[in-house]
Image 1 (tube, helix red, strand yellow):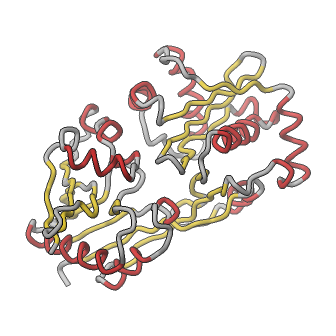
Image 2: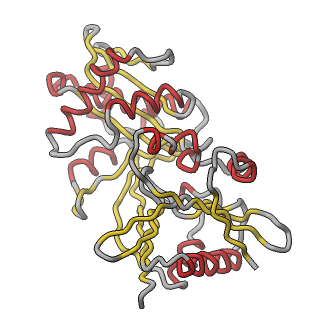
Length: 327
């Protein structure tokens, strides 16, 4: 039997902290997702632990929130972070998955949810790298609501010599003129606004806004400078591009932001910055580097996907699973 426990404060919950110590994931860490409360996003949390009644072991945790819209009360895992779903204890087996998902569905019904969305990361993010969890979700009544494709590099296989000839020449040329630095010291707020403006203007050209405001990103980088790595590329001492990496766990790096100033587009500044951040990740012992999605609104951006493939990044699915409890 599985007991589902709603955690009022994951910052102070010792079991939650101990669970994360053994299978860490940045998005399940209070130190990361607390920025949502600090900046008054009004999220009603439902963070859950799944405890085996016989052994009292925690077999999974889930970050979640409640959203009410048009008469529908939805459980979402999760707003405020890129992905959520279940974070499983290492070596959990398929039968446990079924039992835990069954207990989760009972929790949803008992708490008057009529709808559920789980924003799962690619299966490579799991410590047990198989698709048994997705099999269990599908066989338990969940449907794949939407999919997108993200590009992930196996850093063990990544070598400069494997990149295409034109791309190698471009990187070598840029490397002579572009200086890439990691900002390790506490950020100056005024200087950071200059960096952030590169990101904001870059996204504005694509008719989107950054996920985080300037104040939010400034706070996160300063608070989590071991888990959020901030690169800046300079051309003639002028900031020309930025890259923000999220350390998801000890094996996976997520490139959350890569943006260049349009004035330096012909200098291929974003390319050299991407290459240097990949190189840094491999040198620091990470196994996988997630460059991010290559589609928008369900449509593949072919040029973007092709660009990432030139950096030896293969496509993996990010799936959102949906459950309608009114059926």
